[in-house]
Length: 492
Image (cartoon, rainbow, N blue to C red; front, side, top):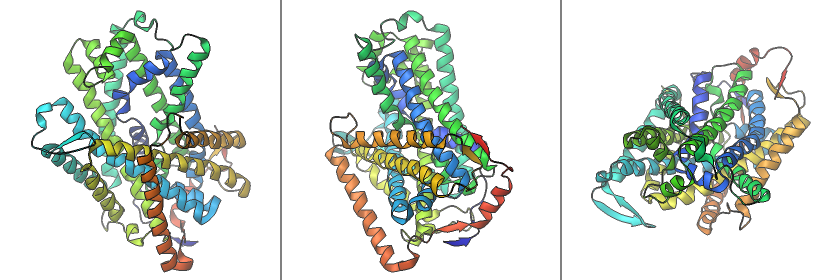
């Protein structure tokens, strides 16, 4: 393993990484999918489901928190899995997470102009063609491409610039959510909850439907792991980085749960069913309109959802580019992607490639990108599983490793993290599970695997012994370990 000083600028503070992680997890789903969650499990059932799902992902988050503070290098999963499982494990883990991040970035680039068109239908002009029933207009395409260029540029000019954008947008999301929750408390009625606390005629059915929501929810928490991707750019104590990672998960669980409760308190079952059958099907927006008796407030909430799209997009672009940079530094993919911008110290070529892929993707419309996201989520869950396994392996292989954020009952946490991510992984594979990948999505997974084999084989042949020659960033580790207080504090 070679050594050198980190070339990244340490520009991110604790607030920056909190809004990056929280903003990544709070996307558009809370606007468009709340009605589905309530119809599946009931208001209280859906809230409990999200709490249970949050507990499941919490264990994975604890593993990430400990590993991030022990190995604070950009790339996150790439570094953890290499140290625990070696070259092959590291390649599979990092290539999987890049696939997941890329899928989300492509989808968000398509989702934002689509929602803009929902707000202003007259915006759609000059029909071009259709893909899978999704009509693509020239104005829609121009807006999508312009947004890709803008968000990519923001990330190229620096992580701090991206964090400033993230802060503003996340504050808007939080403000809109708080307004909805507060309005529900003032204008809502407990009578609306009658008949929709849970879904099911028997206790067994109620439990089953609640668990159905719980199993689905971890997919909405993907994003907390952007923190380890940018570990070298964070200026904060290692212990606090771990705490912020865990806090971001707790805040996301609370946000989703309170929004569900607010919608149920404002709308009865008939109202929700009618809203879901409408053209937009945006139940949360309709709840906001009912709370204020104003259609304009529905648009205000949708603007909050639009901000959520951008925050997810921004965070995953940061995560994907840093993961590519880490693989390139190790000669696992062409080293050209390890180039940093001479002024802004960002992985410019990796960002540029992700921008080009996203621009190409928007030409295929929303239908195909839904497949990309599902396939990409499979990649994220696979990375979760490998990181959780790495957590256990390193506790056994290197028990004396300095761990500023140290998980106490590590066996229990590690086993739960492996089990939870393993169950999620199986759900994608087993037909009839409700989350099994479609043939089109499997084709994308196979295609990505094939591309990884090509990259890996090429680099192995060209760089021989330098393939997977991981870099240990001495200065980054030394500086941050100086902040490590004597005597590890065990936390949970």
